[in-house]
Length: 322
Image (cartoon, rainbow, N blue to C red; front, side, top):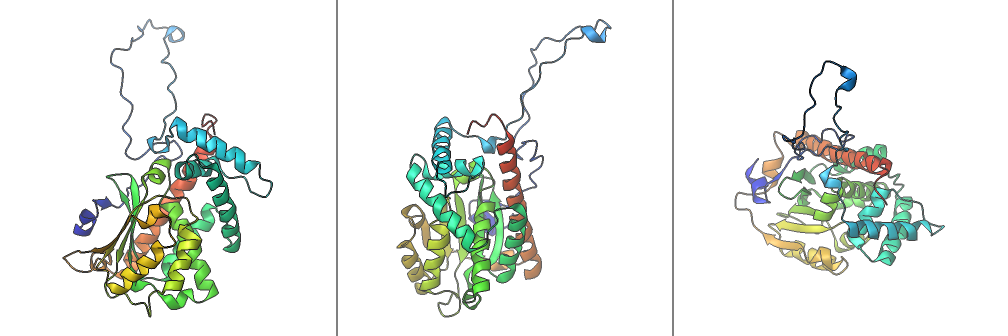
């Protein structure tokens, strides 16, 4: 782990999520053995041997829900599926809405309505195949923007590190570039919430803002549009946004974004963070920018694969009670 990752709460690259289909979480310990359990005597007759009791299926601890969250999810599911103009969602998505909007069923329904229009406008298929293509496309669209996508072993959340100097404003002024970027952001948020624990914990954004320019990197109109069309719609929790080496221009941009963002997001944006050892990019663009970019793409794709796998397992589980 490098010094930058230690600085941002020991955020680390996730190891491979093994046995997803079987429901095993990478940090989950095997169940303890009961040493006091009776052992059948071997009488030489296999038919008379006492068979061990069947073991309950392994439950991924990152997919656990509280009774209250289940109740909210059932209410949200009933409300959405009673609306003829709304598409049915997966049980995973109902639970995601419940974790974020909680008992406010009306807010969850409004969000579902807006998200349906959003996905139609940006041709988002909401499938793994579409996600893998969109993630590669958005990172390749601005090769110097996304520095890293990491898993925080300390809290089970995810972090995205970006160099705002790599933001290309001209790309977003084309319809193709804009739609590619927005669809990519949607799937990045998908990748940052692959299970209920990470959705509940919230996401972290870390921005390197040194040498940021309003003329070439971002302007007030585009930044507000990103906030209203993505971050105000998608169901997520923002744990923190840390803006390193932010100057006057970037701080003004953040102030304008706070005016349109939900308070729960805007209040967790921290400007003026300092890292004394230089720009963050020098620690992530190793051994070279192209290799680092490919690593970031693969990390995002790994996490979004986990999300769709967990979604399928949860949907097939007849005991999920949603």
